[in-house]
Amino acid sequence: MRKILRFIDALCKKRASINSSTRDAVQDNITSQLLTKSDGFAQLNNVLVIGTTNLPETIDTVLTRPGRLETLIKVELPTENDRLKIFDIYTKSMLQNHLLDNDIDIDIEQILFGTHGLTGAHIEKLVRLAVSNALRRDVIEHGTLHIGEDSAEQLRIRHSDFSIALEKVQSKPSDFYKGETNDM
Image (cartoon, rainbow, N blue to C red; front, side, top):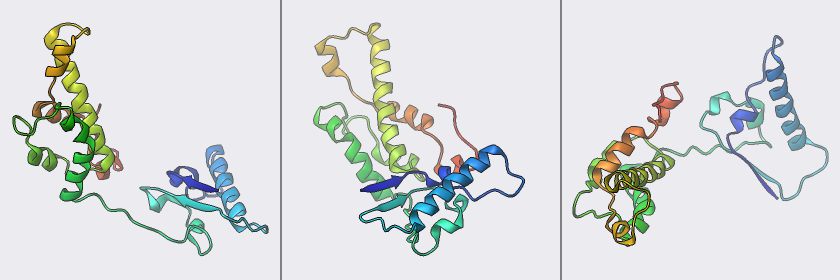
């Protein structure tokens, strides 16, 4: 049995001081329970605990001692080449269905330049927002939600759809954790 604790920092924050609030006491209890289970007298076979976080400094350090969550792996932000591969993954079906035409209007280099410092999840969101923008534009152009098959086949995602989406995609992760976010 495998358990993955996504965003373990939300569960196992550094334990509070003596003057802690009720919320801190609950989080302390969760951390203590996890430690008790991992250090228990009974051996737990086939149990692999993986905790993920983007704020490792907020995790209680007792969790990273030997025998617990002792192996730390840092995943860097994607490079430009990585971002291109991620973009290709999320736009592959669009290219196959002729919704995206790189030869006419899409400037992939400019779009990728705008994704510097973003994660794969941000790029996925960028592509989804571009599709939403194209659909919205198409509905406005036709003045109806009831679009015929011929009109649907003419739908194309344009560079402007990606540009608008790029403005809406959350700012860089490093900005987010500083409390600086863009409204969606």
